[in-house]
Image (cartoon, rainbow, N blue to C red):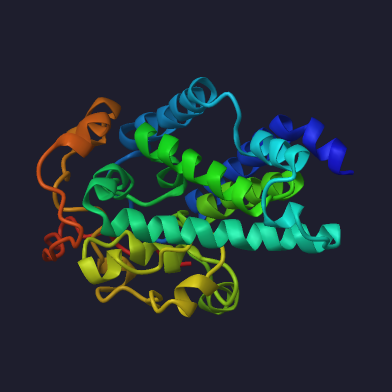
Length: 289
């Protein structure tokens, strides 16, 4: 089974990505949580173009990606899990959990180191919050994230199957928790016991500094609860909260050419300043389920 998964890894990842993306895009169109401030034709071209660009950049810059690194580590006996004897299922589970914790830790780091925040703030500069926001990362951040991931994979000796599972899960849950999707309150409360939900992660995209610096998880919600970075709801509610950061707030800033230069423009305070929500005429309105 493992060999079958690895031999079809590119198709598995692509099929999972397209299936989850289309499903969530349809769901959030039918049950939106907030009214859009900008139409899809303004935001989606830039956000989606970044997916193709970042994929190409990784293929060019890294001859070996995470799955390849896991296979090399296994062949060479590198990493903790290649030095100890564990049942396959337990090694896979341990690797997935450690990789998820590493993503949480990296995310915290990117918020609290000024030059890393310069790269990461492009993700937060989106002025709406939907499934394509999950795909909006600067190419330099994507390459740095891959370097970190390769190091973690080799250090822990993650099984290649675990890396495939983790990357599929991470992509799927990231698109889910960035969805502009209105879940019933009871379902949100139940899911966020384990997973990061859209309402939980949306708080992280608030312009308020204490909310931006919370809810860092992309997959499992346990890390935010465990390390004290969990915030249940935004102060202004999901209808009244302001999405984005203060530096880049015009439609022009949503163009892909402007996204590329955002890390190099203006100051980059790690702790964002609070600003009042927009005037009532432009405040997003919560959609009813």
